[in-house]
Structure formats: C-alpha cells, structure tokens
Image (cartoon, rainbow, N blue to C red; front, side, top):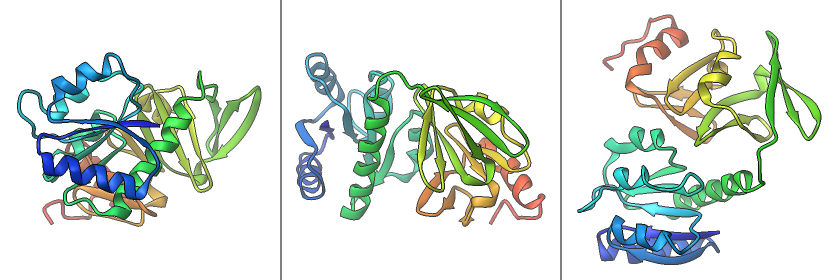
Length: 241
C-alpha cells in the first residue's frame, strides 16, 4: 500500500513520516508542502492513501480532497477539531488530531489497509437483495446470507459503497447509505450524519458531537442531532448540555 504526506509544515511532515515508519510497513512515496505539488505527483504515481493536513496555503486539505480520484483514501491530520464532521462528508477514512499518538495512528492505518483490501477486490459483488422485519439478505458469490438486524452495529458510507459493521465482520456492498437506510427499521436504526447510520441498541454512550460504539467514534451531524436525540430518548435529553 502506497501513501504520501501533504502538510505545509516541514516539522509536521518529518514527524508524520517517522511515526508511520514506527507503526506500519506501508510505503511512503513522498511528502509535499502543498496540494498542487501533491496533485502533480498523483498524475504519474499510484497512491492508495494520503495523510492530509487541512489548513494549508494555496489549496486547503478539504478542497484538495474533492479533487482526488475515488480510489484514493484519506486520513486527515490537523490541529483543529472543528473540521472533523466535514472530513467524513468527504469520505475520509479517519481524522487525527495533532499531536498524533502512535496507537491512534496505528489504528487509523489498520483501518485504511482493511478498506483498501475491500475496495481492491475488483467489482464489489455483495448486494442487499431483500429485507424482512428482522434481517437483511446479503448476496455474495452467488449465495445468500441472512444478516440479523441485531448483529449490525452501524453502517458507514464509503465513496460509492457502504460498509456494514457487524459484531463479527465488515461487509462492503455496492449501495449508497440512503438506499440501505430505507431498508432498515426506523425504530432501530438512525441516520446520524451524512456518512453513518447506527443501531440505537448498540450505542454505548454519546455526547453532542460523537457517538461511541465499542471502540468506534462516530460523528454526530448537527442537522441530524435533534432527530437522533428524539429517536434515542424520546426527546427527554437536554440538547444544550
């Protein structure tokens, strides 16, 4: 798996390169101080993953992300937490706040490697064929698999696909998040951001900005917050806390 680093601060680029080498064996093809230079490099080099700063001169990381090919994964690296929700709307794999800790980086890279493997398997053959009140039928390799709703923890939108996170595995299907959400019972599953649908029964805790399910931190979008609070608590929680 090949990656590059894009950050306008030389020290930040050097530190990121050092951290990546310590926690992973992915190939670092280069580092760049600005988005135009990185974009020029991408024209002649195959890059699977970009570690991307946000606040940069010339072109911001968010603007640059919109220019990238669909098969290029992104991990945002920034000192500013306010861009987190926007980053997931751009199909970012993860969002790391500086100073970046090794365990957090290692987790993000492991996720990127997994998603790269899922997306590089060629045409995604898994499809959601039908649903009942209790389960979905997933078709994969000419076989049908029953996926009970209580096994699904959450569903994540990823480019042109969705990743169904269950208690035991991750399934990628060629379907958008809106379509699969419509196949799920509204009393159990809630849309909480542009990129996530969660099983209300799987939630461990949450605050005004984040939902926690096991080790996963799921962003709670502002436009979805009120509906989520109502679905989860019947409107009994104070949104201003």
